[in-house]
Amino acid sequence: MPGMTPNGSGSRWSRRRLLTFGLAPVAVLACAAAGGAELVSRGVLPGRTLLQELDGACSVPAPPLAFSPLGPSADGTFYSAARRRTVGYTIAYPPGRRPGDELPLVVVLHAFGGDHAHALTGMSPAQAVALKPGGRPQSAMALTPMAMVTVDGGGYWNPHPGDDPMAMVIGELIPRCQRLGLGRPPRRIAVMGTSMGGYGALLLAEKYPRLFAAVAAVSPAAWTSYPQARQANPGAFASAAAFASGDVITHAAALGRRPVRIASGYDDPFYPGVRALARALPAGAVAVFGPGCHDGSFFTAQEPPSLAFLASHLA
Image 1 (cartoon, one colour):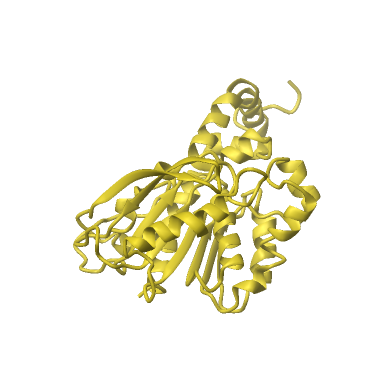
Image 2: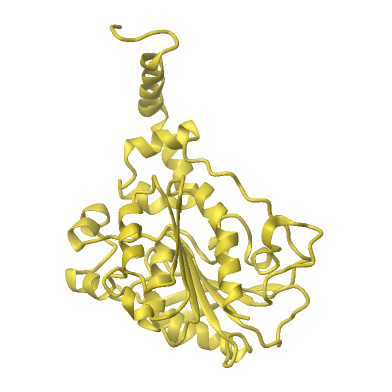
């Protein structure tokens, strides 16, 4: 064909076309499994990003991980009146601690399509609170002792008719943890999330700044306008009024002096929104941008520094 050479760009494009039309379903499944399910299922991921997934262009080097001997963790369920259903949750304790100990608490919100068992991409909750910063197995350093709780939030963390995960976290999950001595004053509470969970973490911290001592969001699903959000994902907000109430960019000042860390890859479809969020955040907020897409590779790379950031503010 004209313009194609055995080793040139034409040959590369020919291969990409084959991948695009022949293997696109595989790419969709791979992206969904990596935590970007809301992008794939709603058609937000462009073809360029799918090709980057296939070609490895989205790959971010995995940080070395090291853990202290794991502490106990437990799964459970409770009926949520706010969500009108039974939800599952996991509580994990740091090394050397056990149920009954009073500890700071980190609430971790999963991505779209996730659940309490898959709130983190690169590790379990028990591993997360046993993480050794810097991946040094022999190091005596460890995170500030803190417990972690994850919970089933459905697809979105903002309120929807008949399903209010945010009210569930505030009115049901956190009080349940506090009765166990976790996050009970003077112990502090932080919140963290990935993708749609990252949006939810920011929303919770903005709505309840006195409750949360710090917030971290990895690749948060941040839209700059209701039409943009509706075009990308019609189910994300129940109405224009709901978007206005839950617009984490417009309401960023509500965080005040709370420690905030956000991170996004340059090739993440939400990157423009996260950049706008970074400009709106109060002075002193940490915004990390670098190579990467909206996938498990970037999520895994950013979870350890996000946890270390929160731990430093729960001491």
